[in-house]
Length: 563
Image (cartoon, rainbow, N blue to C red):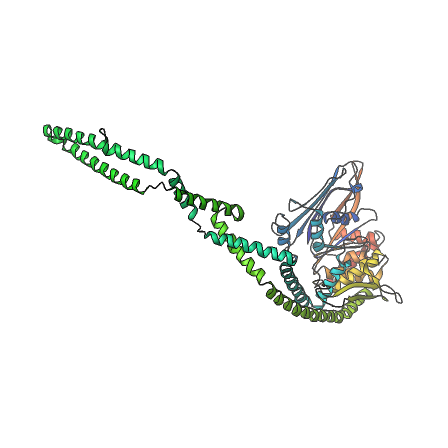
């Protein structure tokens, strides 16, 4: 439901906040007081075209904000917001904002996130229906009319079954297109995949071999220098006159002499023996290291060739050897897929033929069910119209079914083979015309009211706005309109701009629009009326503030309270 509507600097409104109630809300006021500002503001915040001439004189910009409680909305608001990169709702409150300036700047927000007009418009289609001399009317769209007909007839499962078949058919067609290529391109693709697989397979790759090759290459390319250094180290240990072995022997004899003079120096001799042992270990390890070094040019060449091969494969197929192996695995699967193309095409074509028959049967059954539902819907709406002053009217739904040839030649929409258009004949003897061609805004609004009454349980739009629904009616018809508004308010939030006291008296909340002069400027104000003020306003609508008018107004309220 619409909980709050704030309007700033629009036409005669300076700054107005309207807190609306659940159920049926009536808005009344003198002609020209500014009731239509409410609908104009809703149009703006729901993505309609901005008329900058409506910006309040002396102001540079206009702003409209609307807060909706979406806790009971069937439309998947959360998913819609996520898909459009918008902030989620807090406490099920959806905040829409529209601002535009006299110089052309136009901004809109959803929950504080910048949005496009298309996003506002898409949300508006699921939030509000405005009926009257305005164009924000979902029931005028044939696609929406088909959804309503199916909902009225309980055909949602049949419709979804058909849509599922269409989706399955489309998926198979996509798979088929991926297999069908021209023969030259097909042959080239096979040759390329086979060459790639052969090249990768011939390399006999291991994921961890590159680090090992890098180490071996580093050693092999420096083998001569390593051998020279190892041999030099061995000479310094044992072979030279000044080698560590010779100096160690001299040091040992010196320490022996020291021990003879001072027996406590035995620990020093022990440390020397450990050092000599370490030197022998070092000599042994150096000898083994030198023996393993090999300056074989042929081996070096083999390592370099292997590394070059790996680099070449990585340039073609991936950043690492593991990536190259993975590329080969995927290429193998793709090659198998292409080589099995003919068999897969046969399977897909057989499944498409089977689906084509299923679609034909499901679509024809859905069309048959719809043709059975249409008379029931027509009678229900026609009966409602009779209570709204159209005693000789007739409502119908024209259905046109396209013959099913083949999904491949003429794919249907996911809603079936049918196109539908709601039609209305206000007077006996006149041919029915599409709803969108009805000239009278009053007729249009009352037809919509009849439809909404019949479809109250199936229609998902939570907020209904009616303007000029009471044009050119009075008496019992006005009372019937008010009663229908009240009953609609039990399932939806209803906002009705009316000039008739019986229509307004049925409302659970009543708002009055007035014009006032403040600081030499005319401003429009809206306030909710208590019972005393409602009597005064209803009496005005009945013709004045006489005792008779006030008694009549109070009687209308009492009658509604008792019903």
